[in-house]
Length: 122
Image (cartoon, rainbow, N blue to C red; front, side, top):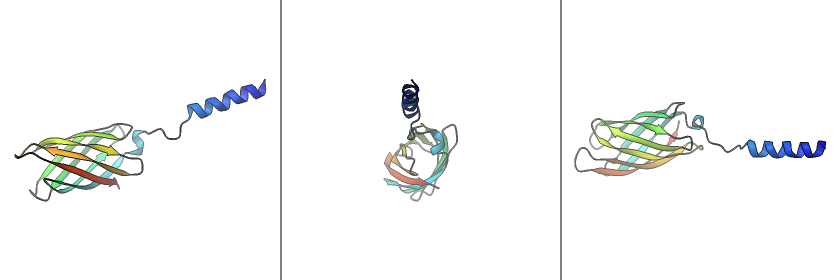
């Protein structure tokens, strides 16, 4: 009887405790990198413990700063907007090995611009 109990207890522990579960805490901190495409420059943002993302993109072409704001899921999916003075999106994926990449788009000023970004957690 003890062996059966221990067998069930061990099986329950293996099923209930997965070591690869992502949490938002894996991504909390400062991230930065570069972006390119129709525009190019640098970006940085901070992820807080609720998944809120706040930061900036700096255009080397226009010498302007654009605000980044959005949210990050527990699995690392980034969904943010680029605003003031532009209107666009900053989307991608952050990984637990401190790397990130994705795409960006910006419809203001005209013509619309877009490209890709990459970076890492500092």
